Image (cartoon, rainbow, N blue to C red; front, top):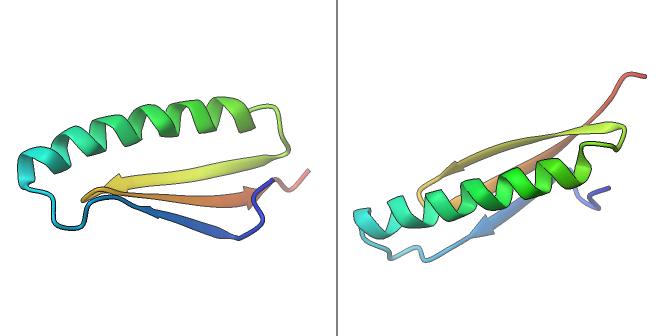
Length: 63
């Protein structure tokens, strides 16, 4: 369970457009593993990834 409702991971703010593309691909893989890890928990992890940033938000299930 995340300790904070929102977790923000910032990566290379000064990266070029091509670097952002590569960073976002890597963050997408990280997102996949995070979702897999939390899949069995009673919450849903909402993720979005753009411009070298990965946003994770825990959404508790209603069950």
